[in-house]
Image (cartoon, rainbow, N blue to C red):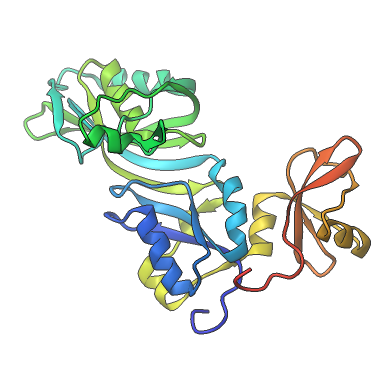
Length: 301
């Protein structure tokens, strides 16, 4: 794939620890031989796992990938709070977690399951008056972000173990959550609810929407095989499909409305030859194009 023409599609990257999401995009630009590369959903440098990367015209799908639910495996350390709510920040406070029972930890996770409000970490990438929150914090500002609603579909605890002299406890968990959830904040809030503080020490994203680690490849693997999921196939996985006759495919390729279909959500519409023509959404008795991809599926378009 690398030696020839690279077409539009998604690549599921297993991001290594220590790399920013932007680092991965820069690397993929070199591997794919195109500047038109983007990603869906930032992972902190400490975190590893699934990072969905779009190539050429498939970058237009990334907005829809970002909004999907995610799954993470995480290790939460109870007994210490940090500036960043993870292991990369200085310790703010310590309190022995030796007396915290397994039952209390599981109950605390239960309280943090379902529809909750969450205050993102002050060192998140959220912009405050045009500047990233983490930039303001690093310049000495005291930043408190507004709470936002998120949904924790599952907070399953697998293991609880003492660390060091027993004053710290590590909790291994799997978390299924809505887009926009901060796992660092979840670790902080679990520790706070137990009265001992908490922070994240390890994080691995195992799923983004329909894409999982089973489909992911390391950067070393991608250097020899891009494993591109073509844009037509990627759209079929992300959306309900609608097969079009030639006349409707032609109308959509020119941005015209066509008759409404049976599905009210966003739909991927395909020409008879299987080419992705557009993303559609019903509007009364018509389906309007949200994004038009026709004509063709060539590279660098």
